[in-house]
Every structure is written in structure tokens, then in C-alpha cells.
Length: 405
Ligand SMILES: Nc1nc2c(ncn2[C@@H]2O[C@H](COP(=O)(O)OP(=O)(O)OP(=O)(O)O)[C@@H](O)[C@H]2O)c(=O)[nH]1
Ligand SMILES: [Mg+2]
Image 1: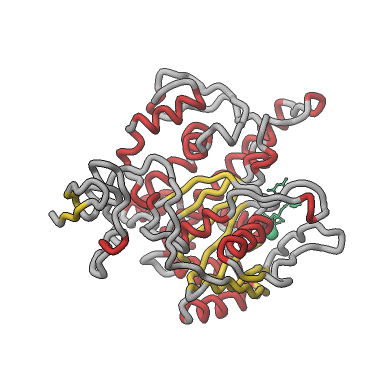
Image 2: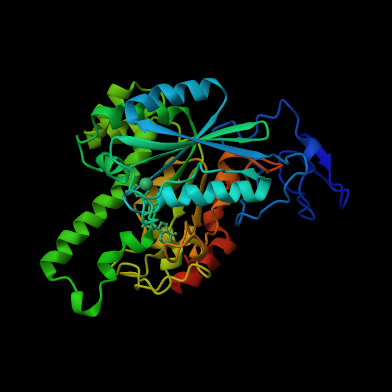
């Protein structure tokens, strides 16, 4: 075993650990050798401690980038060539996807503003995606928004497609034409994905005003739509996984055949790029109820159904919330994604006036995926299956459901 000495307590510990096994001091930066491929392997490091929650590490003083931003965008076919070229030039590509009106474009605008605020620089007029009334324009189907970001020597390009195009991945056989070609070519080049989902929107069926309660028929239709919406995110991840090692034609074909897809996925490595599950528009969550009648995860087998609860983002761990109430998305991510992070974010809230807007937690997904400002590999990558059996995890789940797994 390759050991290093902890600068704080002088204990010797495996250099592959992020923190000293004795006192928890972060491993010093210079302990990172060039030949250390830790983090590149599909295997989880055998000695890695499960990371309980993401704890921001002090940013390195090495990175003090000045940020500049340039808006680019256009129709999907031109995006294929553009992103191939940006990839060739060394840009890290970051995808922001999700259902229509779930706040993707606003999230990106707040994310880039947060990057500029944290690292200095100027966005100029590059973030304007608003109509004359000051409202965020819907991203038109068949088009994409993108921003080239230079942060010091680091080059990042963030792209954003219309929710209506993303939705096509949910309907078997609907993913064709420009959006299929775009995703087939651009996804495999991506550094990471921010999957944006507004719980306020996706759970609207359970949050109707008392005088607008759905009839039994309406509820059934709504439930089908909900399951389909949730499944769209799963299918997006399945598609991303299939694209690695298969031609896009075969990946598209597999997408229309559930049995063949399942067999193909079983042979594939997990999705390697980090996936951020971004619960957007979180200012609207307090008081929103989760679905009722939800079957509990297998570890909670004593329960027949989970109680419906009110959301309170400040007190509920987003990963534990997904575990309880967003199966099968959670299960799919756990089984098929190597490194996933769950976060609540606010793109903006309030009126049309800029002064009424505020945003929150938009920087973290960017830093996690690009590694900007982080002295060590993203610690969430080291979340192992063992974490789900830890006391920390149990207490997080218990805080939401009242039942320990
Ligand atoms: N309250 C609140 N509203 C938000 C937030 N983010 C976005 N919105 C509003 O939600 C609506 C949809 O936001 P967009 O960013 O355009 O959503 P989108 O996912 O890009 O939508 P498409 O382009 O149609 O796919 C807009 O009216 C936004 O102003 C948020 O964090 N909080
Ligand atoms: Mg948009």
C-alpha cells in the first residue's frame, strides 16, 4: 500500500484516501501524483471512505480565474459541428437537460452569473434570453442555447435544449431527426450533465387547489403522464449509456426495444460522466406535497405505502428524497451512474424586475462537473454502495420518512 503522512496528526494512511483515516484532515494537494489514475477507473477505490454529504473543500488559491462569457447557439444541426469543434479545441461540454419549463435556461443564467461572481469577470450582455416583457424566452424546439465560458485557462461550453425536444426521448420511437442526431453526437463528448427537474412542476397532480381536485379519470391520466415524465429522465440516461460503445443507429434502435435495451445495458459500464440531479425552482417547494400511495424502497419493506409529506428543502436531503419518492429514477442512477450528485437550486424567483430576483445553489453543479476551484477530485465520485448502509444515510432518510431503512 502506498502511504502518505498526514500533515496534521502524522499518521500514515493510504494515499488513495481523500482524508486522513485518523483525524479526517484532507490529503495535501501535492500528494496527487501524475500517474494517479484514481477517479478514471470504473471501479470504486477499495479504501475510499463513503462521502456522507458534499462538504465544500477550501478552494485552491491556485485557481483564481477571470471569467469571460460568449453566447453561441442556433439550430440543432449546426450544434453538432460546433460542439465537435469546441471539443477539439479543449472545451469541456456541459449539458443541461430536462422537461419543458422546468427552469433550465434560468438555471444556466444564474449558474454563469454565480461563476462570474465567484471568480471575477464579466458576462456583458451575453446572458440575455428574455423577451420584451422581461420573461425568460422558451427555448424553441429544434434550437439550442450555448455559452462558451473561459475561466482562466479552463474552457467550458454549456448547452441547453428545449424541454419539448428532451421530451421526445420519453416516447418510444419519437426520438428522431435533428434532436436524435444532436444527442447522438454531442452527448458522448460531454463532461457532465445537469438533469434539471422541478419537483414543483412534476408533482403538480398532488398539489391542486382544493376546488380543482382531479376526478378519478383525470387522476389516472395525470398519473400516466407523471410516470412518463419521470421515465424520460431514465431513458435519457439509458441513451447516454448505450451511446458509449455503440453506434448511434444501434443505440436508437435499442431505445425502442425495452428487452434488448435491458440486455445491452447489463453489459455496459456505468455512465462515467458525473450526473447532477438538479431539483430546480426550489423556492416554490415549501409546502408542496410528495405523491401519495408510493411504494417504499425495498429496505423499508415494513411499510405498505409511504406517507405523503410536505417538502422543506432546507431540512430534507435531496438524495434521500429521491430515494423515497422518485423511484425508478433514483434506482436507475444508483445502478447505472458512477457519480451522481443531488441538489436543490433556485434559478430565480420573484417578479420581472431584476432587483426582485435571487438565485441559490447554482455554482455547485458547475464546479462539480468542471472541477473548477476544487483541489481534489469531486468527492461525490467516491460515494459507494456502502454509503447506503451507513448510519448517516439512515438518519437522512429517517428525517424525511420517520423510518430508518
Ligand atoms: N420561482 C421560480 N421560477 C423560475 C425559476 N427558474 C425558472 N423560473 C421560471 O420558470 C419558467 C421556465 O423557466 P425556463 O428557464 O425558461 O425553463 P426551461 O426549462 O428552459 O423551459 P424550455 O425552454 O421551455 O424547455 C420561466 O417563467 C422562469 O422565469 C426558479 O428558480 N424559481
Ligand atoms: Mg429554456
